[in-house]
Length: 88
Image 1 (cartoon, one colour):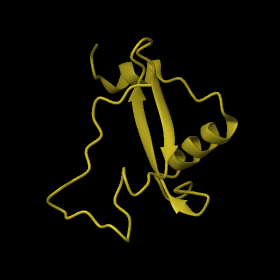
Image 2: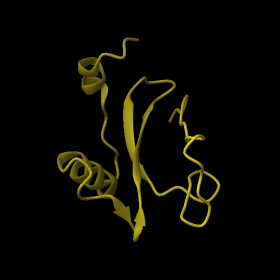
Image 3: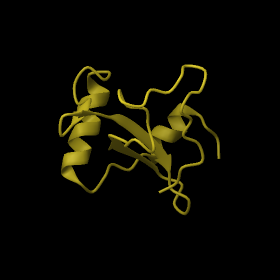
């Protein structure tokens, strides 16, 4: 499968959850200026590819101390968090 942006756009399938669809749409429409928090916590939008369907999914995630750096557990700049190979 090609990683061409046009190809990915055609395969995007919005979440069945209205709250998730609205948050992702707001975040993307404002280039992250709005929709960047969930229950008062900062979020990132995870873009994943379904293992069986190959469809693109986008999900807001606030992470946790185990999955993302927080102010109480900073990660040095030389050790970036890399999310790869994630499937839905």
